[in-house]
Length: 115
Image 1 (cartoon, rainbow, N blue to C red):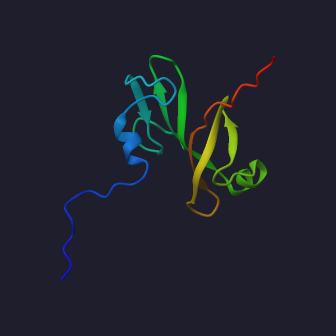
Image 2: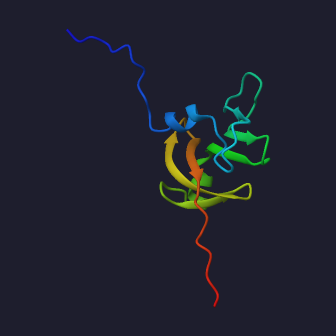
């Protein structure tokens, strides 16, 4: 017989979410808005708002199939959203015409040196 483990399963993103820090500045004074259409937030996206630096950092962005094609979104690709640059971690199709795009902040481009 198989026994179920009482330990919670950990997914790749758990460590970052449990940490509770702003990805932009490292502050712990953040407010996480979870995606959903019930409760306090009525938003298709999931994001973090920082009280110290004022940045909004997205974690999940909802897109239609058409938007995925037009923006050419695929895992590993860089793209801009709301003024910040992100890298697509994965895409989860949910429903007939919706996909959840999991993103992380892109590291800044190395500045070109002028001599």
